[in-house]
Length: 359
Length: 157
Ligand code: SF4
Ligand code: SF4
Image (tube, rainbow over all chains, first blue to last red; front, side, top):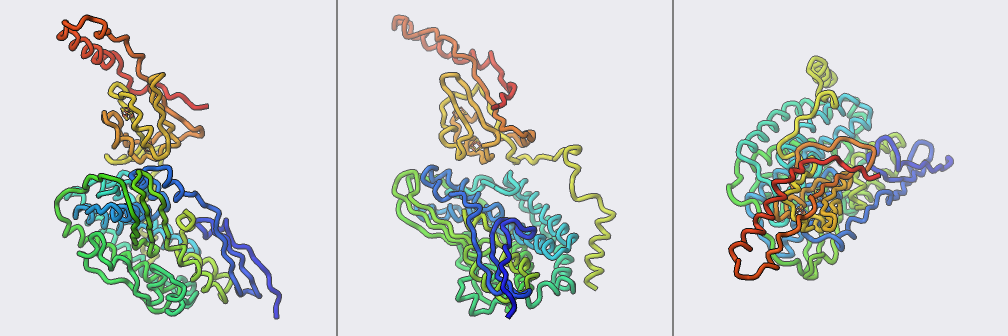
């Protein structure tokens, strides 16, 4: 038997956008075991709930993650709105949907770029991010922020998008579709990309279910799981089916995310066609009392928001459970037995967001 | 062939104008909604301190004694919560970022000291009409006298 060595991987590593540390137990070039440790970026955002009024807390919760910021804001609002039995106007629900799906496109394009960067395909990385830029421009124009939007508030949204604005968004999305198709062909058909992805880090259906994976990671292993299917917000009125793949390897995960980009574009187009006129917010009165759980489908998977109010203006407790939290066990599982050189790919394909895991 | 496909995209971008901006040389185009920085119209401010209490990052300090309103620019997260809650609507969002700095800058705005009131209370009660007019005049005065648009920022060193 060859000698076992431990190689520390991270918290600072070129493929890691955020700090996570792994102790890789190596035998020859093979990983026998991976021991993850997190805790480098804990910010204590949940604790802040005791110091910030429930109406202002949405600004804090949005900052749980820089990429799914809108989704987190929405999740928090959904949870507190459920608590206070607020019914959000329909137009606001549609607008939330549009922004959330735009976030998904931007998140997946960012991830595709990082993946390309991970296997050393620099021009692919640049092009993915160039396309993503037009989405960020939409954000800036409609919300005022490129990353953190601060448009979601309790009872609705802060800003409306005019009919021309919506038409413009539809036009931009139509425009990037062509470029995305070109990009897709490279991601899914280029032999050098395939060499790095196909058959790497297989996660079987049963493992995916057993390890409670969520989001694209689960869907790439054939698990049909998508919180949007419960029809919250305007999702109930949009026609879509979760994107799934069977293979469960890195390639399947890449494919799921690319297909989801196109799916999101289709959903936004539908939402723009259907959006009703009307109010964008209802006034919020009273204080939250009781507890409520809301679930959201973030770009990385299911996120969970629990809030409990005690009738004062500060919530008693707020709990956010983010998708990466749930995908780390699956990552550790796929790392067992892989090649050392494939470790970066495996870590990247769960689309780790450590900041939101630690909050 | 797939290799040629990225080749097409790469070749295309060789002849297109750059996707990036030569940033400081060519300035950015701000959108109307861009949350750049918070500006205040000091004349309208009544120093009520609501913005200070509601700010999620405690970036604003309102001092009644010195009649000043101070914002820590680096602490502010441009959430515009203060703009929303201000009862006088004297806070606004300016669609332009603050200039980059290596220091934690703060901007302090002051209202001129309150002019001694014409003291209508001291007057005997009968002159009700006069008493009503006097404070109105007093309130209008500082507004006209001071147009404190943007005083020199006070660096917090
Ligand atoms: S809330 Fe408005 S009026 Fe009150 S102190 Fe702040 S800026 Fe002045
Ligand atoms: S924009 Fe937000 S963070 Fe900045 S001063 Fe106003 S309330 Fe505070």
